[in-house]
Image 1 (cartoon, one colour):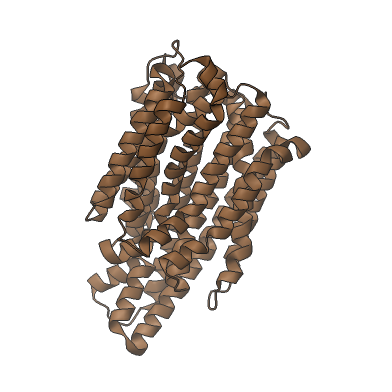
Image 2: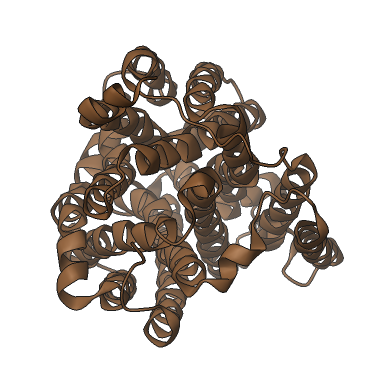
Length: 505
């Protein structure tokens, strides 16, 4: 690709990249608004819902670093195009799935495609926007699109579910991926680092297995018990595998995770800030769409529209984040973003359990959007700007690993705390009613399952069951969001005490 095209058409290339990145990040949350529908159509339990969301993020995160190496070695444009094809194929399979297990498998395929797309896109931006000011602006737009995708996913999902079957939320990816493919062929320049080491497939396998085992232990703990032998065994095994992964990266001649990057505080603390902020954001969105539909009774479309304030705040704050960072420095911009996320989670956790309303959660949702918009572009620019440009594929992959691991852990931890609290309260509320084991499994499996049983029972008993289930869900919501808030507050302490004030140019 001639250098002239690289410079004259770089903003058009950015538009193509952002279109493809948009569908990847819409897919992070478009599924959330369909979760209640999957409870009804596929009989998914709470843990099943968490796996449908996290199987995508698990593979996405596990393969990102090796995909970054592949992009640097064989060409970022090539990996970008292959990723689009795989993502579109996985989307088609997901749309046609007839069971929870089949949907999880196809979500894994989608995660593999996304893992190729994202590092190739961000490293391409880094290579075509040479000047620090232009690069910061381009990354701000890219990160803003990421945030917008996360926020508008529920709206897009609600629109599709109001007119089509649930599989349409995946099938819509296919024509957009096709447009991105055609645009990338003609507008996105190719770049590579011919001196890059060979891909670290051993590291990819270890990291994916380690993260997968950790997520299994967290997600399945409410079902098997947090102190059960199986959960503790898997937790310990996951830690052993993850420690082995770090050791492997330390001794490997071609590590996919460049541990020396983490000696640079602009890199390590920025990555940690992204992880901790997204932990709370994704966990909250996982819960909020269920709260809006099951607890407040909104349709998928109405629930999706009520996530719009999050998107609006991201749209406003993300493009302004580079300006804010120049005015008050990087450290305090990232800290302010985390503070807004923490405040949003805390505010939502304080709403009434007996008479919750949308208005009561609106301030918290606005804060979540503001925090995401301030934190993500600033932390991303700090991280990417701290690595050599020829290593941008691995650097950008590490950035997105932090995003995906944070989101996966947020859904797993916050979702499992909610499920544990919900199950404890609903079982206590139904003591003495002699409910058959199969029906009790449905009731304790999710709020949606309990409401389905309540509807079938009808009368005063059905009303009492629905009321008890909603109260149990709200109890879990409060505790889980407080945990998310505390995690974000911990991130503020690290950012204020360790992150340098300015990004490296």
